Length: 287
Image 1 (tube, rainbow, N blue to C red):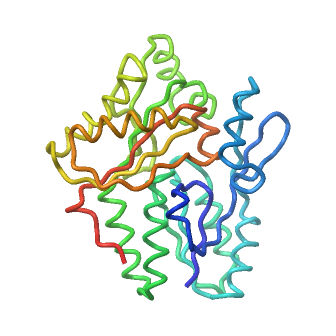
Image 2 (cartoon, rainbow, N blue to C red):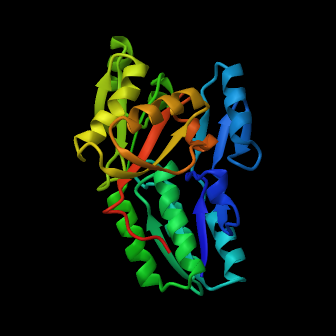
């Protein structure tokens, strides 16, 4: 079995070592140039470029034809394909993959809507990679992915809402009001529809970082052992602050922090800091 995904997921360089996976790069348009996320432009280059321009980046949904090409290529290696994608509630990528899969009837393509993005999606991708490597059955792998998705959650904050507003990922009215009031939101992804939802608010970005562990504490008792990983958009200082705040309340089993991919940073701008967490006792054993 081979795995296909898109560049909407994030994992640290350490987690990516030795990984064999087919990734369709999603596209970013900025200052008249189109970049394939992670191919034509890396994370550091993208955030530097973003600082130098006043233009807002846009992203484009991959066409079914692009997925068809990658499916046909992978089919030559293995007729069994597991295709995992960024939340259908935030992107049309999954729907394009569904259309393309119907064009390759000779392949056994199983599609998974991760109903998430970035590191939380990355945890599902990593679990699938490990399970395939260990020769798990498709049924067992899908069960594992479901358990990973159910156990984990992402919540993030960002200093500037204008990118999310421009990208249409949140209500323009709510975003405008939040900007006028100087409020920094805590944002999460709902498991049922895979869309962004409000998880809290703070008056400053620093307080928003402090509010994230407090939000987690509403779900789990202080001292709970958590599997945790932090992602940021060119903001390692903010990531370190969030790490320290989280360690005050929980027994943390940290995975390496990482910068989020350009395709996601295009919708958030520089500065975002977020965390993916799951209680160890609820997180499934990884192969």
